[in-house]
Amino acid sequence: MKNTMKLEILAQSVNESFARSTVAAFALPLNPSLSALSDIKTAVSEGVTNAIVHAYRDETDEDKKKIFLEAEIFDEKGRKGIHIVITDHGKGIEDVPQAISPFYTTLDGEERSGMGFTVMQTFMTDMQVESEPGKGTRVTLTKILDEDER
Ligand SMILES: Nc1ncnc2c1ncn2[C@@H]1O[C@H](COP(=O)(O)OP(=O)(O)O)[C@@H](O)[C@H]1O
Ligand SMILES: [Mg+2]
Image (tube, rainbow, N blue to C red):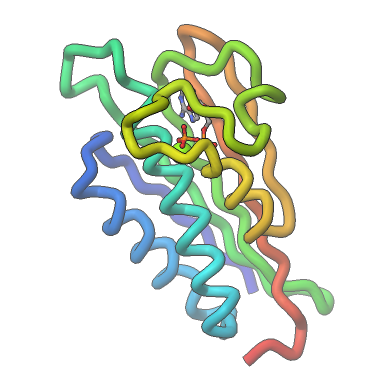
């Protein structure tokens, strides 16, 4: 079994829960455990929140503040899971290794913990971050589920 989806939303905080719930609903055919589902929701929430609060900080044209979400679920040959790609066309990240290190944040004093990437890395099986300053950022998240997970 394989299925794919794409979603385009504006980078507004109201859309964070929409994105999180949509990906969770899309993952349901995998019969994920509640704990796996909760991990996926938490990771999507962190990734989308980053695109909302960081990516378009310098963008004044509201219509340009877009987040692209893609997901693929698969259950084949004894391997099942989900790939999620969160893309923005925002300001990008100068130094990705520094950005993903625990407690690093460029928004000190604004209730950001600098733990978003660490949470995504911890809760998912894999995380890849590609970014180009001035062009945008793409975060790819993978969660492999246990075969007997019900
Ligand atoms: N989509 C993004 N676009 C631009 N910068 C980003 C993006 N996501 C993360 N960053 C940068 O990486 C840093 C670390 O992100 P994160 O670990 O989620 O911590 P926090 O969001 O609490 O600052 C952010 O402070 C920001 O500078
Ligand atoms: Mg964050």
